[in-house]
Structures are given as C-alpha cells and as structure tokens.
Image (cartoon, rainbow, N blue to C red; front, side, top):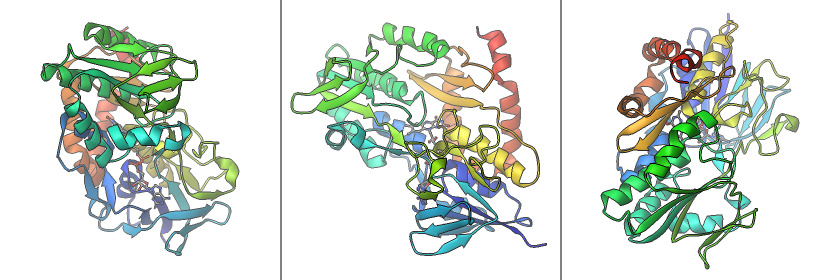
Length: 395
Ligand SMILES: Cc1cc2nc3c(=O)[nH]c(=O)nc-3n(C[C@H](O)[C@H](O)[C@H](O)COP(=O)(O)OP(=O)(O)OC[C@H]3O[C@@H](n4cnc5c(N)ncnc54)[C@H](O)[C@@H]3O)c2cc1C
C-alpha cells in the first residue's frame, strides 16, 4: 500500500508537533516553512522584561524526526480543489492531506503611527530585535509614564499583555524607580482581563501594585510627536514610552477558494475536527485558524494531536481546551484554563503555577521532538486539570 502524502505548511508549534506525531510507515510527511527556524515565541516576554539572552530558536530541520522531509520555502498558494501547493521557489507539491499551520502575524498598518513607535520602543509580539528594544526602553526610562496598550483583537496569547505589565511594574520597583515611573495599561475591554473570572484574580493585583488601567480604550492612532495615544472614544493617553500589542492577521498564502478565509485572513474550520470549511482532506491548526479558541501554543499542540489521530482513522475531537500560563510577576503565576463547555476558571495566584510555566519553557524543545514521551504526561495533566473539575474547587 502506498503511503499517504501529508503536506504541512508551517514548522512552528503546531506543524512540527503534528509532523513528529505521524507514523512514517503510513505517511510520507513534508513540512514547508519560509523560515529555517522554529521560534519559541513565549520567550519574547523574558527578552523584553528580563533582558534574557537565552536562545529562543532552533533549526526546524533539527527538530523534525529523521523521516520527515523539510523544504525551506514560503508557500505562495494553495488550490484546495485540486490538492496542490505552489511554493515561492516555484515547486508544486501534490498531497492527499494538507495541514496549514502558518500562525498569525502582527498587522502594524491598522493603527496610524504604530510602526513609528515599534521602531522606537519595540514590542514583544514580533521579533527578538523588537523585544530587545523594549528592554532598552525600560532601562532608559527613569521617570514618567510607561504604557502598554492592547491595539486590537486577536493577538497571540491572551494573558501576554498583562504579563508584560506585571513584569514591567516589577522591573521599575526592583530599580527603585516605582515612585517616579507610572505604569499604565489600556484595553478596549470593559475590564483589564476580558474573561471575568480571571479578571477577578488580576484586577486586585493591579490595584495592590498601583498599576493604573484604562478600559474601553480602542486604540485609533498614536501621535509620537505629542506622545499621545488616542482612542476611538476620543480619550488621550499621554506617555513617555509606549508598547502596543499589535492586532494580528492570518495567513499570507493565496488560497483558492477564497471564501474559506475571514476578512483578517484567518482560515475557517470546524471547531471540533479542524477540517477547513468544506474540505475533508485539508486542516488548519494553531493561530492560523478562525476557530473560537485562544491563539496559544498549547491550543496548536492539542489541535495537532487531534489531527494526527484523525489522519490515522480515529474520530478524535477537540474540546476547546485552553491552558495559558500567566506570569504575575514576583515569582507568582496562574493559568487561564477553560474549554468549549466551561468558562475560564478563577485559579488563584501561586508559586507553583509560575514554576510550571518555567518548567514548560525548559522542556519545550524536547516536547516538540519526542511527542511519544510527552503525550502520556500531557494526557494525565489535562485530565487532572479539566476545567469542570477545577471549577468545583475554585469558584
Ligand atoms: C509574548 C508571547 C507569549 C506567549 N506565551 C504563550 C504561552 O505561555 N503559552 C502558549 O501556549 N502560547 C504562548 N504564546 C503563543 C504561541 O507562541 C503561539 O500561539 C504558537 O506559536 C502558535 O503556533 P502555530 O504553529 O500556530 O504558529 P507559529 O509557531 O507562529 O508557526 C508558524 C510557522 O509558519 C511559518 N509560515 C508562515 N507563513 C508561511 C508561508 N506562507 N509559507 C511557509 N511558512 C510559513 C512561519 O515561518 C512559522 O514558522 C505566546 C506568544 C507570544 C507572542
């Protein structure tokens, strides 16, 4: 029997795990990525606010199991009807099954003035270079207002804007500058964290640490000359340094038919199976999809596992589980845990949750390369921390 040809576009969190989960006696797997590197994006937080120099990227080729083929090229277009992928290097790949795992990317042109402030103050959602700029921004600010603003939905990792706020506050306090530097957080939501149970955990911490926050602040434009961020509601936020969480958009691949894409270029799919709308032989996993789940590596990982099982003939389904580690500063953390049937759990801050975040980061590359060792550990962890169970304890 000939092997089924699986083409995976994107060798990031979702794509690499999926490739390494497929048995080679059954599948001929090709991963295509424009970049030679796989980035561990969550580390941008520690580059930006702790000045970490720890390497946060690995070569994709080195992360994939020896039987997986890797082509370093962008994917230019996908023809879902004719099962073809055309690469930027001109090569055409035919497939039996396609998985798009191209993540999401910052869209700087949605907010007037955004590019200018990224060049000046940096951000922690795009590149190591920009995250290093944030580190030099906070190191050079000795007084005034340091502001972080959410520029619009969606963005990677729902807790990440507030994680930056908590780490910045800790940074200025540790430098003895807290009475000179105001830390301000601006969001378009009615509360600092959009999901109410988690907001009940974080809002008191913001207040206790003297972090100011502005709600219903839908960022419209930034005037760097006057150093003000202006909201659609007409409010002005005066800053000395401003970091904006960029709104993200989906894939740059030309996809036919186009109607599988949303306006922001995310790919529409079944939220349980990740099948691209109308196609049994094509899937989208991770940040590239429009399914209503948080854009996190854990989501990409869980979706990859479901797709691997479906490709092997099982009727596996996603339950929409989220599990985002949330750094609250000062060695404390929590997790944002929910699924399709259960809202976010009100998990109190603990040192254990913070440690779990760092342990996860330390084990990340191993988890990608050896899913067969880590899958049983994850299964046990996800079962023990089911939101329905946790909600009985933490109300
Ligand atoms: C500051 C920050 C903190 C975060 N913290 C956490 C956390 O604590 N926990 C967590 O689970 N998640 C976290 N995340 C989110 C997590 O990093 C992403 O959700 C995850 O990487 C998504 O995986 P993915 O496979 O969908 O996309 P990615 O990992 O981004 O991979 C996409 C790949 O596709 C490639 N690609 C794109 N377009 C093309 C194309 N046209 N042709 C070929 N290749 C292409 C890219 O080069 C890239 O390698 C965080 C993110 C940030 C920015």
